[in-house]
Length: 278
Image 1 (tube, one colour):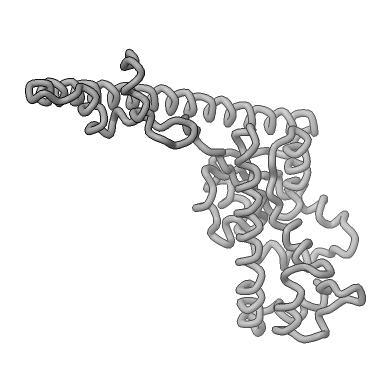
Image 2: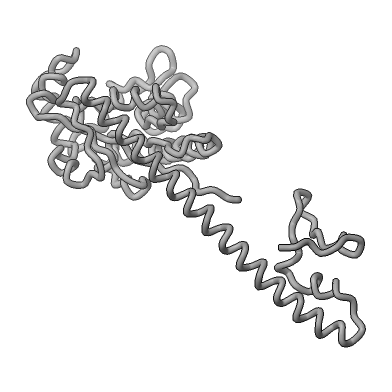
């Protein structure tokens, strides 16, 4: 019988909140995770699908020596209010490629038995992508911890941090819009326990939904068969009174023309076999 597909929770969080760590834990739990940032890196790598169209749109100056896209050079061309149109041009190139890669990842993940496929999208709310997710998980931490984590990174300074935050939906709003929050302001053990609990809850819910779907499927199938048998018997009684074969009733009733593995109607064999009890 057909099964309900995978649930697709969205995973997001502002800079320095620990989303990458949570994403890594999910992979360690053998859960498929589509990482939008990793996809962009692949698209920008030498030979990546985005290299040629970006070069054509922005010139050779955005290419690194190895043939990849130089993100710093590209950033200078699209950052700032005066470059808003250039940014839109870049997004028009990259976003469809990222979406196509995500669709391909989901299609491949759906072949696995795991009922979950996580969509790791840093700018999920900013790009209004929550509509593509079954629910949204926000990774969050106290502001002082976030700031300390970010400023500890190389090539990061307070002004750059402030500029990045200005482009992101505030953490307080993300928490309000979240279906689930993972608080990374705790110890690693406590944080990981939240992630494990979330996954167990999702798996339990998906299992229950599949069981409900399975029960409904068999109930509907049984009802269809019962209706088909009643219709066939009624038709048989009418045809039998006219000298027709009882099997004509089966052939005239689509509900009783069962499909076998070879997709052929099984009623073609019924002349030589007794009617099975349903």
